[in-house]
Image (cartoon, rainbow, N blue to C red; front, side):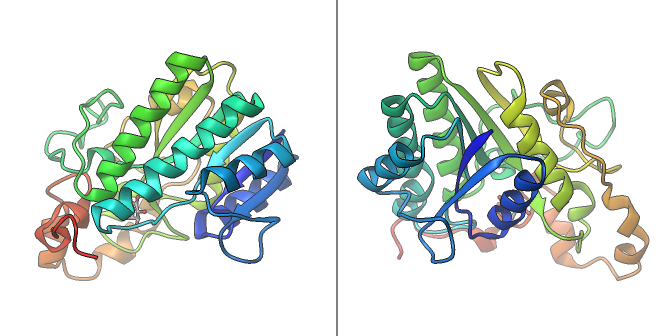
Length: 267
Ligand code: 15L
């Protein structure tokens, strides 16, 4: 499949571009940073339209965005305006599928208590409960994608990604880890699942201690293979810190703690 990937020069973008290419996809990388096939600002509707019109992809993987907390206007530009620019270009150029890098922080303020057992995991239908302006941006982008699915009948898959890392490094990561290989599996499944309409899934590996429901991903063909438990002994050999305890209270971990609270308009 011919796929345009925004944010292709970022940490997820590099792994997903290489992984999808090795699975036989024809990948075109777009980024504001040098080194990609196309240099464009994903928040600029004219630049985005030119990129989509000139490459004519069958699907878009939208990864571009500030990957952490920022002031609210920056978060809205980074997550909502970029998504809108892509959706408008898709409609004009008849591109029918987008896979979006959303985040667990869209529901990050959800208390974790009760979601640790196999028969009670956090579903994708839980109400939005962002922990940061970053999370607010992801909630709004998911809502926007849903509106374009309703209006235009396109397919949009929102992947609520956990902790994308080479390996888990904290106690929280024993639940939240998304391995590089599983990340590629997830985007491949989201690109190739037949007619998903609007779909939401959790982008987490098959972690023994995970608290997210992986069934919606499995229904789309995402079958994670890796498990953070392989690092549990090593991680748990270090003393549990106050930070670990604070991070365990809510789904979003550190983003749901006071150290991430900031005024909306502070640059
Ligand atoms: C994310 O969505 C962020 O981009 C990343 O910085 C981490 O905070 C990650 O989630 C996580 O929850 O570990």
